Image (cartoon, rainbow, N blue to C red; front, side, top):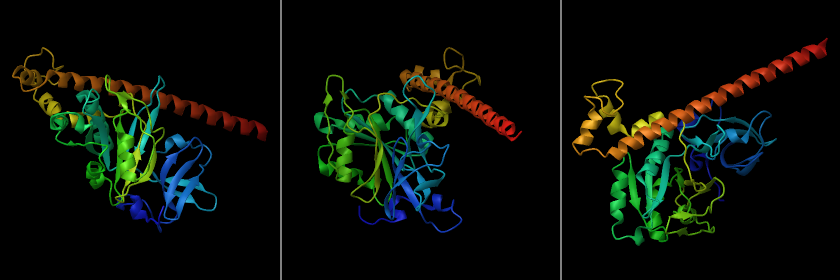
Length: 344
């Protein structure tokens, strides 16, 4: 990698305001390993260890940190400008960090069975909660007669959405994404396996990695990206590519959901009863719009489903955090008692 500056890496006034001295020994996390952090600095790549008691799971690709160049130890993490996270896959109540300090979330889908409004609304809520700009990237535009129909469907989901349809195998088409990945700006790509994320990543960064196609009968593919990483783009920005997600479980995203479904939240405020369930109650503004044919009842169902899921996941994670705090308190008390006994 050629010489880069902090500004090239995405350093901004948001992070500078957190410093009370010279901006030295700073780096941006480019990879999170089991026991170490890989990072990029103006002096080149660095591999960082963590102080005792810290976990690499508390860091995300894109984070800014200060480190000790003599020991290679991470000293602090700067407060994030944006943070993408989800409830981790599986049965455990674990909050999984996806990426930090992302300017634009590129939600990648395709002109086939992968394109689903419910899935896009889920990703849009994630972007809104994180504070990222949402960009819906619709691939395989060369395989259908009217790719614009998919673009219009995506843009109809929220006034916040910018959507573009591209042929990801055409380098000239990929260049349309440079505006979101130039001049130190960071673009993250999320989406299902096989929709073209790796092809887009290769074109934006000049890298060459294996890609695998998708089965057109069900629009499913195999993972080609196996871990999150920060890569410099040829346009002078940064790209965070992520493994394909089979499921995106939202947590602590109620505000993001309400932002995406702002039309419904506004209507809900016009209902006759403040506790309206938007079912059969008289004076329901949402049902009035449905009855008039101006609102798709499916959108109401998807909104309610996301709110229920988020409430359930958020409550479970809160319980897990409380339990961890209790266990840590018991552990510290045990240590204190042990020290007292050894001092007798």
